[in-house]
View 1 (spheres, rainbow, N blue to C red):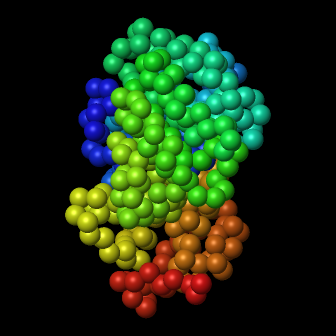
View 2 (tube, rainbow, N blue to C red; view 1 turned 120 degrees about the horizontal axis):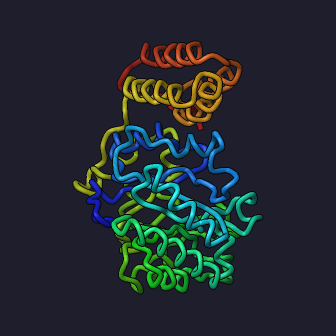
View 3 (cartoon, rainbow, N blue to C red; view 1 turned 180 degrees about the vertical axis):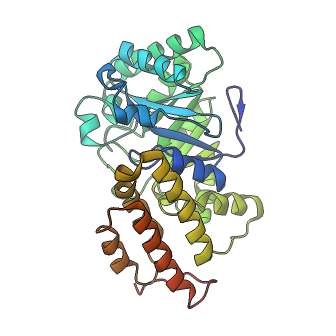
Length: 338
């Protein structure tokens, strides 16, 4: 799949998720089969450009190209400035967030709240595309949206035409409205309608949690690519599973306990190195919980994890837990009773 000057390895993308898709996680997903990943959202507010959080999110050292950075905000000029700043800091693709439903984002008229103001959407897109293309004509600008403001006001089709006319080069659509948050099931009819109506690539997002579901969503929407978010948490190998299934129609066997242990060890070492010991041991807990979900005795183990404040001890406890599972068998993942 082509995006600007870049040829992507495949059409399976990692969704941007605040507090999750940091550089270590993006790198791991790419290693395990993702063809493309978008960074955590970076605020366009100039007062935050040099904060420790923003600088960390803008750290792309050693990252597999292309490097895509998502920006969020509601002021066209400030968003354009933020786009140029992130290009200077290494971004090779600029993605615009108009899909986040979080209150702290929408309360400042950003994220998916923008879908209610189609005029402002157009102004933001035009400002960013014009600013980026002026000095960096080869850098694509992309957009992520939801299907609309609420179920009575689904305007993704209108936004899609605005985006295409503004010079946006790829559009990702989450199959829920802003009001839906993450409740209920994603719908794909709106995505299919948008794909039929515009010429730029369309990416389908929402509830893609298995190889079979990935194939179904591609069939239903005709989308050019799939974006996977929550299903990759603690399961970054989902990208190779989907890729294999789409190519062969066959499912890969579930990873063995020993492989999960190896993947988690590598992820955590990179995570600690990226964040440092104090922040690293604390921010790693959610990843550990996701990896261990469904494993035998994982409930007790996850509670124990929250009491450990040292990276070395955290890693040792993880390996003790996984070694105990392998004493039974290295071939199986032991699921707790439903």
